[in-house]
Image (cartoon, rainbow, N blue to C red; front, side):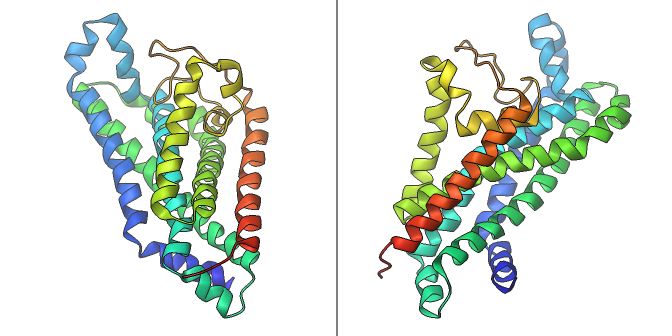
Length: 272
């Protein structure tokens, strides 16, 4: 518990924690407000009118969560890589081992701090996205009666929990990559490359991609593709796995990433 609390305090004061949240909230705000401000032009075309669903509640709840899991997943990879890489480049891991801390335990607790920060980030980002969608709806003149839709609100906690679990899995991948690279920059670069590589691979391996970490993270939430990461766009459509199956694979990828990080750190030579 001591290490966990120390890790959380350390991450709370890191600019990367707040920059990551700010980038996600800012981009969602720009997108939802832009959709609302262009409502007149969008409504003239049946094809473009579907974009107004982004600011129409209760569908907007799904849209916000799709952005949080999709775009937020990429930012989680970067955040996880930044945290893990700093343990090597800043020498904090070496200092912890020198004072007698277990390498494996230190890695697990360090990732535990990331998990807690991601939980806070998901809640704050989701709240910011809902506010932005409400503002966009107000600008567009779209009714907001669905904001209090009972069925949606009742299912929201479970859906948010699934979204957080998927984001944690993506953060774990960045954490593991940076641990293997023993570098922040290398971990972030490789994590971003892996993310976009998986997206592009839908053109060539549509039957395989649905089992890969970023796709299962989105499928685990159980949302239809109405926003970020949707099936539109001219590429090969990817059939998503059932949400419960995807959730199981998310757990598998998550545990595997943490185990790899711990085993590598346990056997690695710590210098510097």
